Length: 170
Image (tube, rainbow, N blue to C red; front, side, top):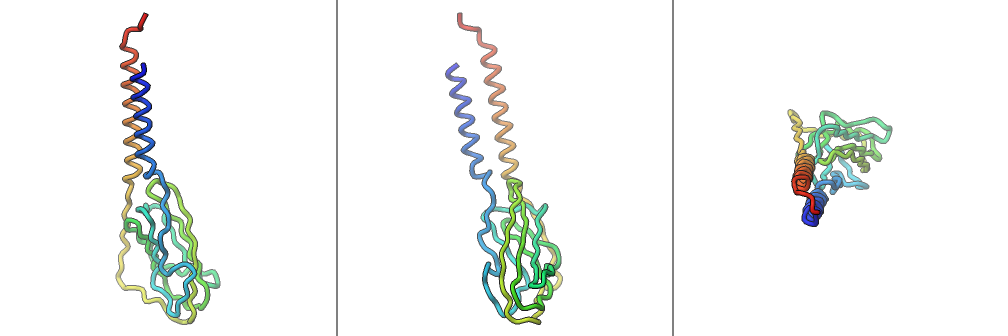
């Protein structure tokens, strides 16, 4: 019986240790233009870089002008840990608010906000022509967690079978 308990405890410990990093949520590492920055010419895109891959499903980025108009144009592009949102003409001077909702690889939604200031009005964005968005998804952490849970269930089932097959000590 002590062996069975030791095997179960070791299996649970292995499961918890191996999923600790996988269960962590993605964190924003950088935003381009940087949060709180000021620039004369408006950017052509907003880039969010995370510490781990981001899923493409459910990713939304809005770039709101000082008057509240969303100037994001085109589809958001998700490649590994980088989210890129092209922006259209930014003809207003002032503070632009970036609001994003992404889904980390572990399936948890994350909300990001930041802002930057454009000092000269009337500069249209220089959006690259003919860009095609590419979306990728990295669900490897979810697959790992599910696989570890299945392995744990098999270990528990085997332990139960072993205990039931042993003759009771009298």
